[in-house]
Image (tube, rainbow, N blue to C red; front, side):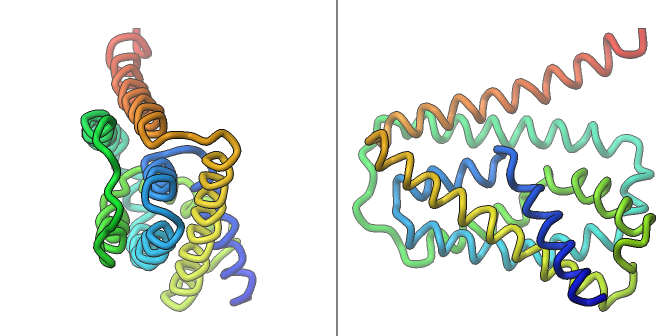
Length: 208
């Protein structure tokens, strides 16, 4: 049962990080601009925080799922987050990349984004509630710890594959840092626009 709980944690969070989002796009940017060493530091730091993040959210999954306005709050937080990341990336698009970075820069960034990761809250609200309700995992403390360890491992695997994919793209298409920054900033702005239009639709059109 412990192994199954761990394995489900890996699969669940691996799937959670397959779609492009603020974390994996930021990682691709770090990989291309700074190299695999900095990318690995980011991934390890982020995955460690993901363990605690998953455990806390899973503990409150049932309560969170009952909070009606939580989705709206998360949407506007994502607008701010994506808008900020897009603006920073766009403003830095013409700046030459640094040749050296602090040994702890990517670690700090990974820890920061590990805590500022609101997209995972609705994911675990749905996934966590489903897994517990259908008795795929237990809701005891030990089971959730094992599940959260698996979740951290799933995040690590998914992000590592994203980093390897980023290096492949850079090598295959000889992407410049400027092109990468422009492309990622456009994606960030697109995600922010999606959340804005989603709220406009829900408020002004869905209930008419």
